[in-house]
Image (cartoon, rainbow, N blue to C red; front, side):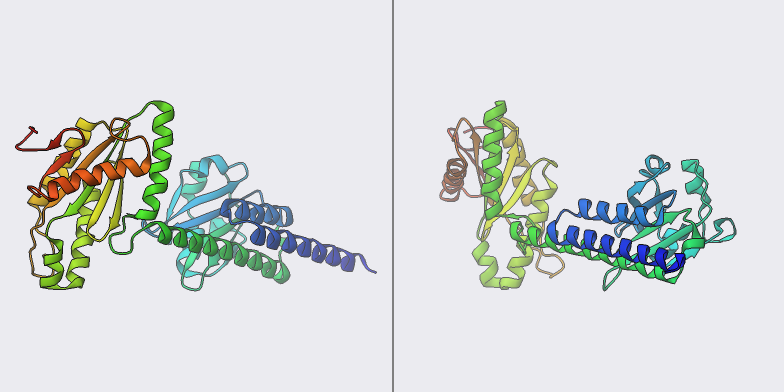
Length: 355
């Protein structure tokens, strides 16, 4: 057997081992980071670049960022972003075609600013897109590979590994989407009641352990049935979606908003005492009073709400009881004044600031 044939068999054996390891990673884990790390490590082992990276597409900003970077320039690349179409990687992401550039100095697509920011010298680049059925998800980039050893079989092998990476990313996104669907409400985009109790249990444990307070607001829209009966369920759904957005707009990043069911909403305010929670409840009540909803439909609805407030640990000691207390205060408002706030152990507000 000739030396060339022996080398070829060794490479084929290495490729099969890598395919086996990558396939094993794909089928044994849903952790995207560990799968991609495996793929990138196997690539480096096979192609031996000076530095290599995985750039992901940020669709909202129309940019590429370095999700994984390995090699001497890795640390400097963490904060580098490329515009779609910028540099060779940006061109590959934009056009969905691979590029093998043996002399980047004479490649008009090359972005010198990346080398300038990393103090790195790029001589050659191999860039391959990670494609899903609909779009480019990212780009794998190998820098300064020995292109004398890079032929059609190596191109095929690299593209196969990139397909594996694309499958891993797409699978992870579907799993994330499914998880979102199980905890969010389709109509409003808020968390659903299923997720409410799980979150509350966590908050009870955390607050108990660290001596925190937290408060819950139970919100019920006044006369919502009239909207459905008068304008139909499509308008009713649109109204609920707009109110969901209005509620979220009044909250901090650490707060949670849930659609409890029908026209009922729950707000969880971590590390918030009763007086602070009352400020939030007033803000929500006033925002509703000031809003005109369903304008696009030409209906211009005015909606108010009955709001109940309860605080842990003063009014209740567990997740179900805190909801029950806030719900009871909401019903106290509902059965008296409507468009008002009921506070556990204080009663319904009679006029601004009094009970």
